[in-house]
Length: 282
Image 1 (cartoon, rainbow, N blue to C red):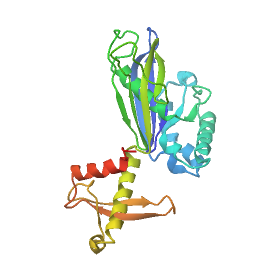
Image 2 (image 1 turned 180 degrees about the vertical axis):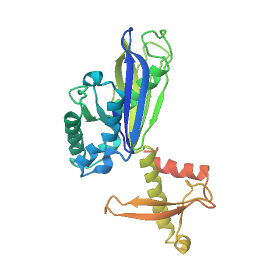
Image 3 (image 1 turned 90 degrees about the vertical axis):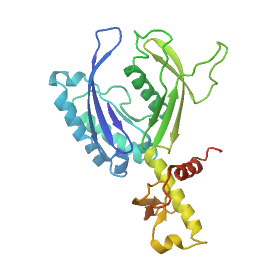
């Protein structure tokens, strides 16, 4: 399984024992490469070639006699989801061609190279965590509580949990947040939501743009920032300084701004900035 995230691509090579009532996980080999596929916008062939370092690990680990019966799939996440026009699909098409021509692994399904829906992204994380914690297997005792999952990616973040109700006549309202899942012979109703644009890297960019915007407003009343060339950012620790890239979506122009946490860096002040960026009241 290749996880094509916004900050990098990772391959997970799993071995399962299929002799029991449910597949039993034995071990996993993991390898990562950077940057992610979305950094190759307009260069689909280069994007596909960037995965060779991961596939060479699969060739090394999986016995040659089993390679033709070891299915492969690539699931891309929010990084590709945010690319404009046909750029993301061009990359996916190039990757699928590359995998089929250069490697012996059969595709896992009819759409082996796709951008994963945000709701599936969180649910798969929920399945993984609860499977490894023995809460959803065939031999798990009935009425075992499951764990909620908070999945913080680079470009999006997901929340998934299995709601519990105090009476049989209570239920989860219909809507995009409701996810019906059958796993290990049991049907479950999950709550899920994906916050596109609020993964770690994207959220950090939102904060930087907001801090830069507020500094530009203060410049009309004071030239403190212009005197030292630094923009105060409470989300940087005191005594630290960092050059960040500010991208203007309207003009498409990017510029570097030196941000400084000296004197003002604090959790409480940063929390106030983040609350404004999240705009929860809307």
